Length: 296
Image 1 (spheres, one colour):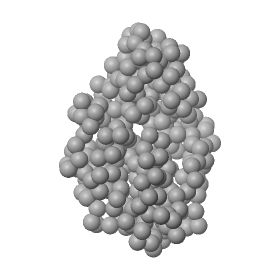
Image 2 (image 1 turned 60 degrees about the vertical axis):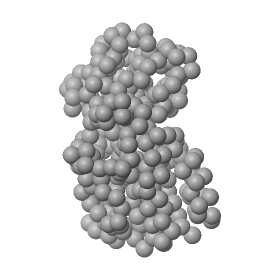
Image 3 (image 1 turned 180 degrees about the vertical axis):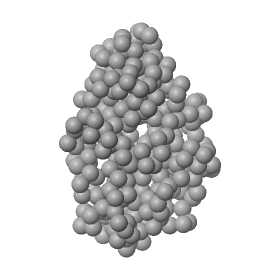
């Protein structure tokens, strides 16, 4: 039986799982895990033969960290099929071309800011979240997600000591829906969310902010296990085919890797203006964050 591990953003999870189960009856999709469980798995057990699924999709950087640390990834993983579509040219220019044949980027997940309409000064940039009147009122997803490490990396890189301090002061206890509601209610002045969670607000008191420096991006990665059954390769092909890439763009708010799939929504409105750190820094990001903060 084909074993799939889909550690994917929640706004695309249900439809993705439902569609795969309909198309491939009997396929085994691993049960939902909490962020704590996923963080522990990708940090400790991923890339071990007995724990790694036939096909894994994940945005957890620790998965790539573990692959990079292997003497021979080919002992566990299969090279990605050369028949998969090429990256769109603008993503190649951004530096998204993979550095190993054992993984592929499926799409880029965008993280943007949101702000309460009465926040002063109203933020239009990541630098504005360092302002003394804003930085103590910023909420980001918890430390068992990649968000705090990502936020700390870019704030430190772009805004130096002020960025480090802003990242340190951010509230890191809430899940995305709670951040959306908390900023909307005025409990926080600003927050960091996937763009799909930043589109609407129940009380209409908050706004999405695509910062002028660009949204932060995390790649959703695919890993194929060595000797995976043909069904796993079929699912992998589905993930890169045009219909699923269009779903990622329209419903997910993500950046598709196919050049024949258009940008959608806020990605199109902002001309896909994003910040990417490079694969090496991405793979080291979580470990560096843990070193700086003492997170175990």
